[in-house]
Length: 481
Image (cartoon, rainbow, N blue to C red; front, side, top):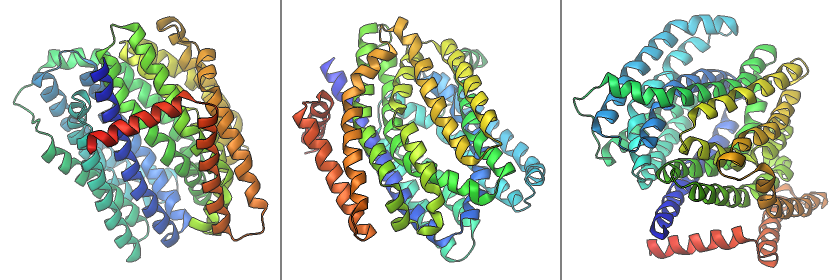
């Protein structure tokens, strides 16, 4: 058990480094591009990205998770899914190629046609990469992700900045995303030794589909629901409104989803291997919620209270309307570890049927909130995500009261010290902005003060998550040394 725990945390650290490295580069590049490009360009690409994201759900969800979860998955399973993905992703691309004029007509923007036809190529790339990613996750080889993602991100950054500098507008963002996906896939293909065999089994495909289709539908519902706001804003409001909504969401997403994705990708295979031991799965779920919240909460609170000086300094005043969106999404995403850990426990226990039911319930609640706010303003729609997030926390955690004996109230009790300390830190940091100082100096003081208060508070109140994170960092440092 001890060795297994070390393996999990080492892989978690590699996954976390991968996400931080790639998104750190992406963050810097997005700042450069935001200064070079107008907000309406981001509105255009955000609209197209909604469609490519939906298509990638079909390719990336379901079968990949099935390969990770299946105890005795072999070359027949992996090769079968690989060939199916290639054919399926190519078919999806053909559909989007011919649907592009209709989509552009609906949004009264003919510029969307070539953008859709080129950017949708990432779906085919995802079809090639998906099984390699499942193989890496199943065999806990997350160091491979670090190099492939970082290589793709750096290559995409270089291409995107060059195209923007050359004055080609939206094509800078298209080139960035497409190059990123292609290079990422190539590096993963070279570094991971698995190769498809000339094997295919409809029986195996059907078996994997029986588990995976529920997760696929769940993921599709979730993606449609999350992106529906962007589709509605793109239709009812301006490209600038969509750009400010997306930019406000991007900064909190950069932090929260990377930490969350690191935990998610490592936790599912680890939990799946221990699915027959309820106490072990509960312990993993508990530790994931406490540790991830300890890391995410101060970052989200800090970003929320420093939102205005950050936008002024980094993006310039033309992006100031994104500040309230950023603050709303910071609060929403601060509680994401509760969603991730609970849902991973349900998937690991083999209850994909229950997973699908939860998604349907959450989306009914969320759509009711969305439709009641969509005619008011984009900001009102953003607030509806916050309310929906609270409801989703309760819904996601409810089954684990019975499956694991770990209720939502118990989970809140576990993370209450982290929340209290982060809020106290946020109040102190917020007060700094009333000093009559330059924006950059205010921001530096806020960051330093926030870090000092959170670390000192953690030591003073002896938060076990603080001690746990320290111990993991020391082990990782020692192992690398």
